[in-house]
Image 1 (tube, rainbow, N blue to C red):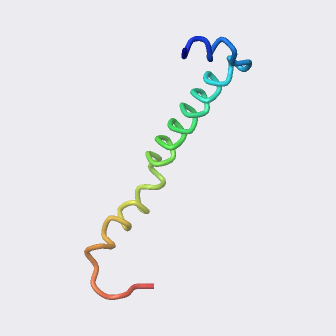
Image 2: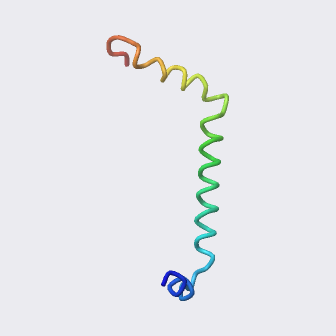
Image 3: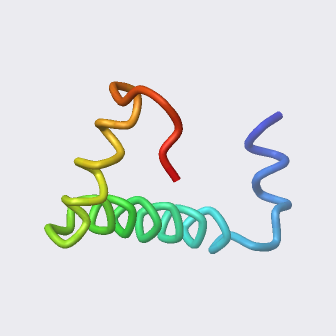
Length: 56
């Protein structure tokens, strides 16, 4: 039944496009979080739960 439905599917390129979009987004997020310029932001954010009081 699944094969019958898939043979009637008109856009055979759509699953490939979705895989490419997912891969590009995933790779972009890995690069975005791994940049050395963001290291200071992550270090300060990791210390937030340990600080007492409100800091603005």
